Image (cartoon, rainbow, N blue to C red; front, side, top):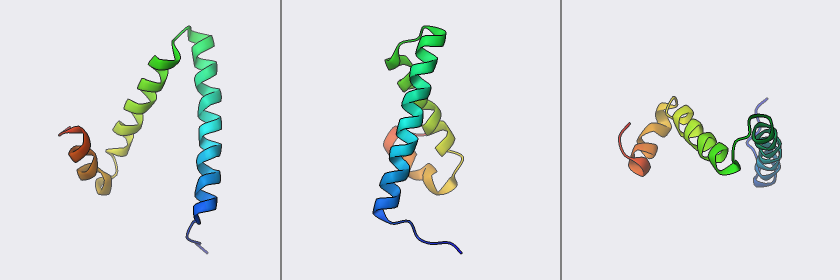
Amino acid sequence: MYQEPTPKSLQEDALNVLECTEDLVEHICHEYMLSGEKVWVMIHTLAVTKMLEFPELREELEDQYGEF
């Protein structure tokens, strides 16, 4: 049965995602000799692009970033 997430569970989930993402960025930077800034910009761009696949988010993203 689905339970609505609590603020505490969302915070814990976000922290887990952040920790995994930071580990991944560190690995990519060392493995491919890329700057952290470059990788974080790529992650941001990929995240926005991925979010465009969700119709309920597209209008909000277009308001923030312009039309895609």
